[in-house]
Length: 173
Picture: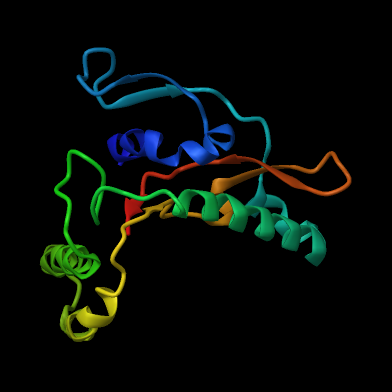
């Protein structure tokens, strides 16, 4: 996931100002016994940790700002459907979703999860292929935009977003 987040960096350029700036990355395991990325610290409060103490209007301000940031990312065309390089791309949205769902179905027995209901949902996904394929132009998606991945500043008259983190679940969809 760390590699995917790193690979998505150039694709989320419209919101680079709100992302941690990567200063170094090592995927060779020569510097540490695992993948490592060194990035700048973003000063801010985790929105999820403080949202219950905020007014409805303050939270609404942040939801609108987050929507604008995500819109900027979603306007970026992608080369294919799926995950970024080096993963294989797909020619259709349904092709990627079916691939990902098959992978989940294959993992369920290994995890001791009953696969009957997921298989039913997979059939629904298969039947929806024509509708999914109405999406013809792949776009960049953040993949994990929720308050736990948003850093905010509440020192002004209204709260504002100062950081958007953890786009490792991002994809082209």
